[in-house]
Image 1 (spheres, rainbow, N blue to C red):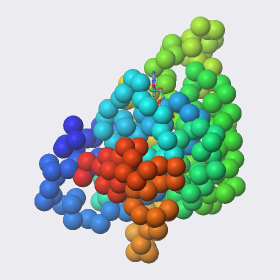
Image 2 (spheres, rainbow, N blue to C red):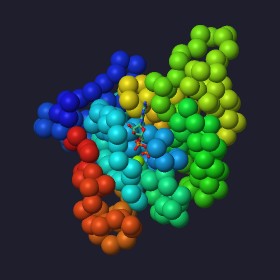
Image 3 (cartoon, protein in one colour):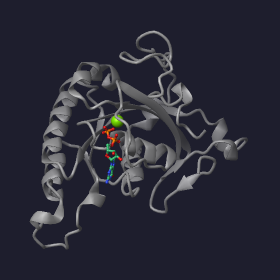
Length: 248
Ligand SMILES: Nc1nc2c(ncn2[C@@H]2O[C@H](COP(=O)(O)OP(=O)(O)O)[C@@H](O)[C@H]2O)c(=O)[nH]1
Ligand SMILES: [Mg+2]
């Protein structure tokens, strides 16, 4: 999977593969770097969403993220090449104070909750509040209700049954997202549902033209590349540094 260009029929976003694309036109276009941060309660599926997006993979018992993980994914959208620089944060409260370092200067954030856990939407709302107060004013925020594979589908107009497994009704989360100007998705990292759409819609909403002008070199927080607070250098939580997880 890693060497091929993947594309869905309804999506304008194409993941740029690795060796398979060597020498292609895509390799010659300077990518627009998009810093994206994932936030949300622990175990809602942040890392799984990234793994699905970057590697089209899923792990049933994924180990919790410590501190943060960094992955990149190059994508092509129309005549542009984007490079998502993805900071996948740990959801545990003890890492909360590190979060500003990851959302600072981010062009996009994906705030994740678990549709089977009502409390995780409350936590998502508090992240949205923090982002809207403290992150870049133009940050594009997407709200993603993950794990929809765990809930029984309900036909339109039908009442949600108590044993459907769902604790957050779609309409409730959608109404909240509309009110606060967020993109809204329901996803399953496990089944690969809705994941590409999250990144596609974010890419469409970001003012890419404005970002094509040269920018100063990126500052690496806390010492050298790959070194994150709370983590030993080269920890396996960091998926390959600046090229980590990227299929390019
Ligand atoms: N059924 C189901 N399980 C999921 C999904 N996404 C993640 N998980 C599981 O939920 C647990 C926590 O996932 P993880 O990605 O580590 O969550 P994080 O702490 O938010 O990064 C793991 O056991 C995953 O396998 C999903 O879409 N559906
Ligand atoms: Mg994680």
